[in-house]
Image (cartoon, rainbow, N blue to C red; front, side):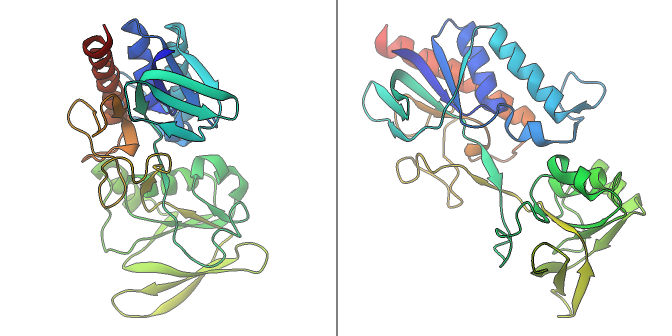
Length: 305
């Protein structure tokens, strides 16, 4: 019997684990792939407090993981198959068995949205990517397309511009939604061609990506861009499959919580990108994780001790 089980090893989950262990709780964290979440696939992080110089995403994630392990957090690599959240004792099921706990912290994060185009899934890994830092090195000296206009899209475009021949940044509006620093860097970068008021209509190629067809939303004009890769950066969708239909959620599927990270089921908390909030950033994920762990501790003390 654990005090708390944390599901998800991104920054929110790791921070929750760190705070839970410091609070004296018997905590177990489940992660199905690798810890660090989206932070580990980010090129450079320069807006997290305490780092006066940019730090690479993988290095940042490793530091958080090492810190959490230092306080005794046990991380188990396994995929959750089922959850039973009702009642005082929560149950978590994996292929390895059943695990019981008094509180659960959901930190399953989110994943990139797709364009929903034909060939998109088929060409995933063959020209279609959702992680510039993961796949950018494969496109050295080539032309690529980045779709989106927010922070992720601009950061991807800037990262890729260091290696590729040219970046076409396709955005459905006529201005970027990204923070001013990233947007300013993109606008000044001669290797990034800004394609305004446009969306990707079709991915071209037979066996792999050879380009895209775009359409201008204002004029209706169509244009083909030759490219070896397309990087999709149009936002995120929550990884809510384990709790969909069981917890209150926003229309977009993000879990609704109060300021203590409590959901509508007693003893179940949510933290990080899975949660509905006004800003999805590393700093808010860490804050969520800390609050969730402290709230779980208070719940356990009041309920069981």
